[in-house]
Amino acid sequence: MAEEKAENNAERWEGSPESISYKPGKGAFLALLAASGLGLALIAFSLWVIPTIGLGNIHPWLPYVLGGLVLLVISFLLIGTLFIGIAALQGRFLVKSTMFRGLLVKLFLPVMFMAGGIMRIPRIKIERAFIEINNRMVRASCGKRFKPEKLLILMPHCIQFDNCKIKVTRNVRNCAACGKCEIGELLSLADEFGINLFISTGGTVARRKVYEERPDAVIAVACERDLTSGVQDAYPLPVWAIINKRPHGYCMETGVAISEIRQAIREMIT
Image (cartoon, rainbow, N blue to C red; front, side, top):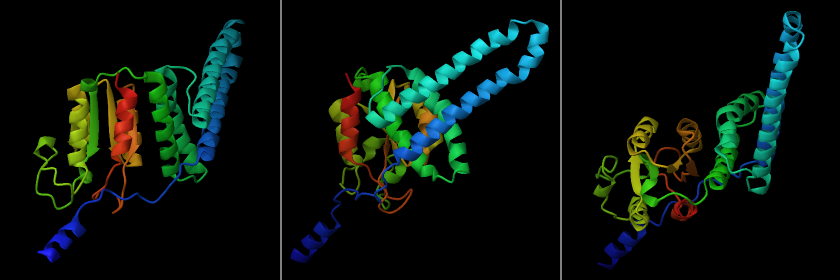
C-alpha cells in the first residue's frame, strides 16, 4: 500500500512547468515599428510626387489637393507610430480607441513581418512583442466594461492530458477534473465568473465558435503564431492573448498559468 501511494503521488500532476524563458525584445519591435511607419510615409509621399507632374497639367490646384490628403495620411501614420511606441515603452495607451489597434493589427504588423524577414529578425520576437502590446491596447481601449456572460475563453485542445480518453472538444463539461491537466481548473474558473469556456481543435473551429457565440471579447490561449493570426482575424473584436506553456514542445500537453487567465478576466469584466 505504501509503495502504491508513493507511486500515485509521483504521478500527481503539479501543473505545467514554464517553457524556455523568452523575453520579447522591445528594441527590435520599436525599430521595426519606426521603420514601418517611415516606410509607409515615404510610400505615401511618393504617391503624391509621381502623379504631380500629370495632375498639374489638368489643373494647377490638383497637386495641392492631393498633397493635402497625403499629408493627412502621413500625419495619421506617424501619430499612430508614436502612440503605439509609447504603449510599448510605458505600458499605457494615450487614446482609448480601437483605431490605432487596428492600425497596428492590419497595417503595421504585416509590414513589420516583411521588414523583419529582410533584417533577419526571428518572427517569434515580433509575435511576442505584438502580443504584449496588443494586450495593453485592449486593456486601455476597452476598459472594464464586459459582462462575464459575453466573454469567451478559447483554449487549444493540446492542453489536454495526452492519454486522456475523455473528449472535451465538443463539450468541456465531459471533463472528469482528474487533475492531470489544467482543464478542470479552467472549468472551475469559468464557473466562478460565469464565463463560457471552449476547447478548440484548431483555428477554423475557434473562428466558427466566435461566430456562433458572438462574444464581446475573447481570452485566447495558444502559441505565438496562432495567437497573432487569431488577433488579426478577430479584429475589431478585442482578444486578450495569452501564450501557452510548452514543456513538451508544440501541440502536446501544453499548459497555461491559471493566474494569467484570472488576471485577464478581472481586467475585462465589469
